[in-house]
Amino acid sequence: MSDADEPLEEALYGAPAAGSFASYDPQEVAPTPDGPGADDEPPAGDAPAETLPAFDPRHSVEFDGLLYLGALSKDFGWLGHRFLIRTLRTDELINVALVVKSYAGSDGYDKAYQAATTGACVMTVDGKPIPVVPLAEGDPLAIMHQRTDWVMRHWFPPVLDRVYDEYIRLELVVRAVLEDMGKASG
Image 1 (cartoon, helix red, strand yellow):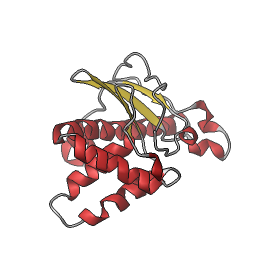
Image 2: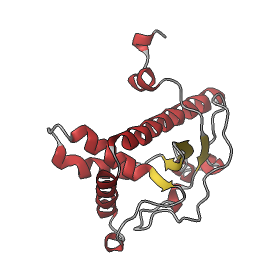
Image 3: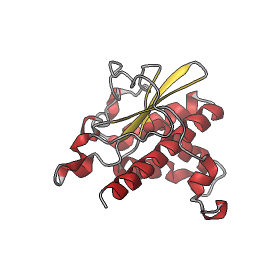
Image 4: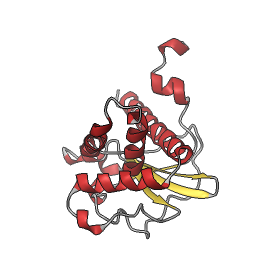
């Protein structure tokens, strides 16, 4: 495949970055005001770049196994800080779109989308979740609004750029794992 034939994401981001990958249980990552608890430990160690991670072994269970295909998290360090991010479910991606809808057609749309996606995918930074006020409990869209607003108000563009880049790389790893699984199954 020539560079011109490469998918846009791979052309922009190259091979997935090294880091520590792990599957996660999407059923246990419900949107809550506090996000995942501070007790959540990021995966230890760094996997070699050539080694693809695996989804939760429950992915092969009939019907319910589909809940685990695509669920990966990644722990990475940057400038003395530890980030734990995860892939987003379809409902979360739709909520990202709803959160940034008011920016459509403006010069700020791309940065708003990046902030919303970053706010949604970050599980912890240095072991702490993004702060969210409990009044949104039970309302995933309200929680998404709060997380996006917090990221927009507190992080400068270079932080958003780095975390968003890692999120895109994580999505590329998911695609690579799925492709590898397809090859293995014949």
